[in-house]
Length: 233
Image (cartoon, rainbow, N blue to C red; front, side, top):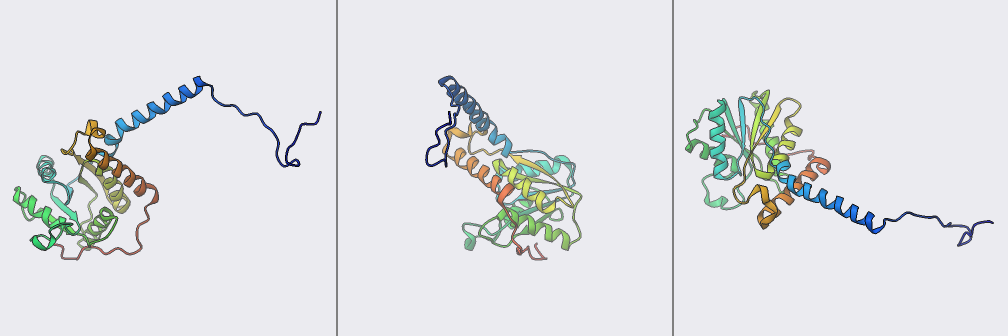
């Protein structure tokens, strides 16, 4: 017997398999495990620490004061020969501040904390509306090339869940010539092990995860990006 073909033979009937209630229960349980595992490990994935043997350190200038104290301790512990501070224009109080960029502010903090002028170098980046971390790395790369001091390796001190994205962007810009390590200073504004229990933790971690995915898969560097002035001090 010829099978029935509705709508003038343009369609045909096919059997399809659908889950039973046991199947749905199993799939929901598996999904719950994936979600719990992902939430539990998201922060540790983003707040990565993976230093490399290096004589040069970089500190992101926007980091909080306690991150700079950690950076000074790291600098002294491993006897780095140079520390660079990156960052663009201050986002608040610019006209009231003696320091016009996070790089200059961070440099002043490191000097006040006991590091000497000959080992600390501020490398400000031009003000940009987006992709500020990338702009800071480009400015640093340009400064190092202008001064003939491109290191074989360096470690970047970042803050909390921002570290993974910082590491990625440093490797994108410097990876061809410089081996990059990363050190994440623990964020003290929320419990990293239970970040989902505070609104700040949820906001920061989810924002950083989205930003990392963007930087990894969607980000396209601008064709022209202003670098820091040659005399960045």
